[in-house]
Amino acid sequence: MINFRAAAYVTSCPDFSFRPKDNLPEVVFLGRSNVGKSSLINALTGQKIAYSSKNAGKTRYLNYFLIDQDFYLVDSPGYGYTAYGNKEDNSFSAMMESYFANPLLKGAVLLLDSRRGVNDDDRQLLGFLRKRNLPTALVFTKADTASQSELAACRQLASALGVSPALFSKKGGDVLELRKTVADFLH
Image (cartoon, rainbow, N blue to C red):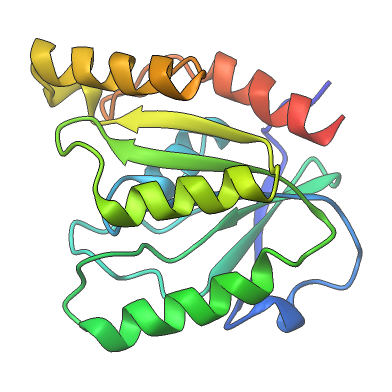
């Protein structure tokens, strides 16, 4: 059983070729800039191992966190608006294209801000993940600050995609279902 408590930051990599060489499986966290990827990793592990910032675009590399000496959670840079502009969007695309060729990648957790809706970047990434048949979990973040109509739209989107949403509140919330999903990706 994975307990997610034995967690440690290992390295930051500008692309897949610099990843740890121990050939452990990986689950990647994806989403727009400032959607809460680092915060969710911290919630899953019960400790502050991933740096989270209020400013978009702070994560610029693939950050590897070793969990239970058994697998990696990988915090990816956000896509979309950053203070650094289109140059960062282009480098994100190049970095992630090589990353998705990774044979150790077992699943993806795509975070969507429940207050913002889905944009073209989100749709493209989701389509890409589906085309690659990569097991993917949708997590709607910031659900504690979303309106009822925004949450209903999230449920409708998840239903249309054929997945059940895991709503995550930035102020806390149950992460047991997401832990189970990550464990399922690995087995």
